[in-house]
Image 1: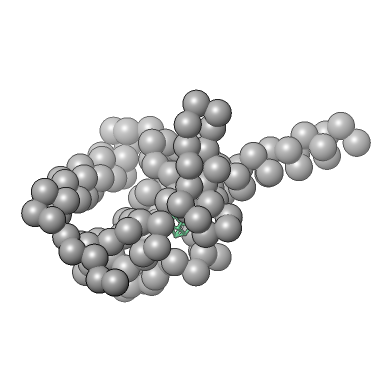
Image 2 (image 1 turned 120 degrees about the vertical axis):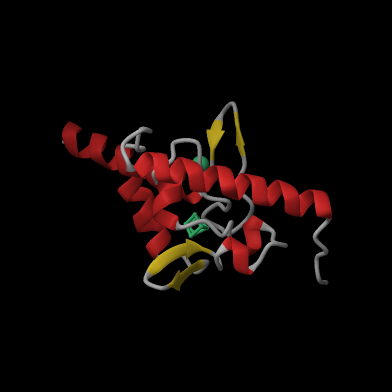
Length: 129
Ligand code: SF4
Ligand SMILES: [Zn+2]
């Protein structure tokens, strides 16, 4: 069934997108910190079926302005993957079973966080051998 975008929902999405765009620009000029393991996240995106390439840039789903009415767990969030990966506050919208990711006090099960935990466990196991 088609989803209908409410005016409030569209406005919220636009404001979020403008905020993300502004923080990405600040990050690029060094005014904001870059998440230290962003390459691990970006690598996950490169293998993700939701990834879309537009003009040589990887996006989480089709770019936001091409599709405003969206469910991030199904359509992706529409952000450029690298910009999103560099922000410590961002998470992938899905888990490794392609279900909506859940985050709470116990942590986050998104594809990015799950991959980072696995990677750090692998590194700990190697050190202890
Ligand atoms: S953020 Fe998650 S859903 Fe989006 S492209 Fe990256 S891995 Fe896929
Ligand atoms: Zn996460």
